Figure 1 (cartoon, rainbow, N blue to C red):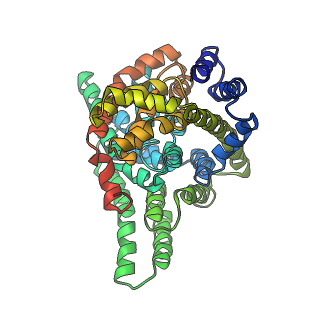
Figure 2: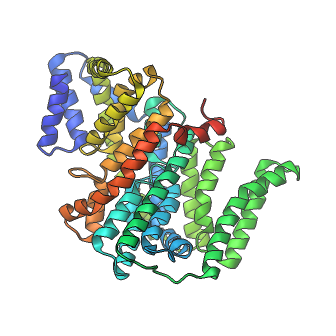
Figure 3: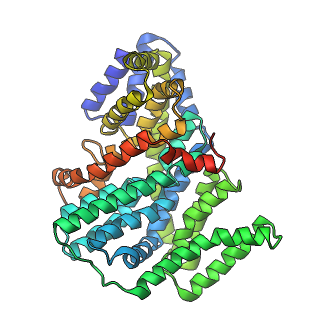
Length: 469
């Protein structure tokens, strides 16, 4: 255990990338201990990515990239301005609402920060907000990306923990709402403290238009239900008619974000109705993105699609390389009994599940500051899941806790990717960006406490939809 973990930590301190550090320390352990033939390294690494659920990773990444080049981010921003821009500290609220909507398409915090963040930070600075406040609210709202479905970390966790990815997606809805309300309350606090006004004049027509868009989207599933129950149509025919009607209405009135708002409805609705698995939902997200960019908005070209594709290949390669390296590392932790020893040690401290969750939060927060989200999930799940099951904690609930902890870790040095993305976008030093983010840890930590100690926030919706016991 000392050789495996010690080698990994030494390589990390030397600045070796986390995936290479895990693979190298695993190979060193195998060669020195002789616990298994060295060819096992390649076999286990290949097995680590030979998984159908992992196909969702490149497709969700591609969907996020396509949404960024399709002009959807600009439309989401315009819609959010109409909805909440008239409130005090308006663009702060716009930032958060925009992230909520974009989260329903991208599934990653980095895509949110890089896509919407570029527009939002510039707009806030142009309206007189400090760069630090603009960066702080953008960083905090970016954490919504993997909490509100769909979510790449949920895909990785679901595969590792062998739990329903669809249930994890539904489990993130209410926690996402809680986080949104806490962040908006924080913006309101800053607005009152600094005596900020609104950024756009209150307008009933604008607010009514935004409300109408929300009503149209919410009416879609109701219309499908009415056509099926009272019209005697098949579900497939009702959906085709509904989408056709919706497209015609959107085309005629040229709404800002109706079709973008439909993305999470289609994905969650499709999984709930059993039309597609979460992996197939990722493909549906790509098809929807292409439809919006090539057909509805006509903002994509073959050149921009090719660029999005190559960006996706690059990101996917790095993510899956981390998964392969983490899979052999996690397997060796189990084989060497290191995972069992760590499990026994934690159980020797407490058998109270609430105390364990507090300790787990501290551990995951610490790990998230130093290790990539994907690698952290792959390593920690085999160690912590047996304790979770032994203490009677629902693994779906624990998946939300782990993911939110790791999202908070993305905002911290030394390896917080959202931190570095926003430092580059805002042209701030990493030190100033870190200081700007600090006040926003308060609503995030309050959300983490609520999600940890009120399990029904996570479990009520999956239970209601029949995806969890």
